[in-house]
Length: 194
Image: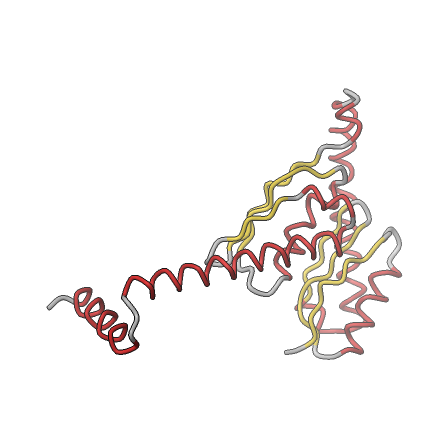
């Protein structure tokens, strides 16, 4: 008897013992998986708005049964568009994220695309410099703990995602990031634990 047949025979036998038809077991598992994915979608959509503000309301969230989240929609702020993935990765149960959110600034609607493209290039270089500065200051203040913190900066909005060992270092990390020149807002995606 093949392994597959043996497994199917065991499922049918267990279902018979429990008094359930084998089909009901498969349907129940699928329904539970769909419910979990729907719950995760709602949790992620709420977290996006909580962490990134009203601009994130236009983001549609789809989560499959394996914990892969797809973010679809538009954002008027580049920080919302880029940091949506960081927020999604913070939600327990989300294992992978595909960010298809498009940045559609007001200037594009007004037809000023060439100027905005030049600005974006300069902004990305500035963002990179701000990330480096925040990482440097975190390392100085909390040492090796800073190595477990992912820093993303977009238009002066900085997200800190990772794990810190205790509340004290959590608070120090947030205050340190807030104090760095050029930081306008800090998005707290830090967990306390090992």
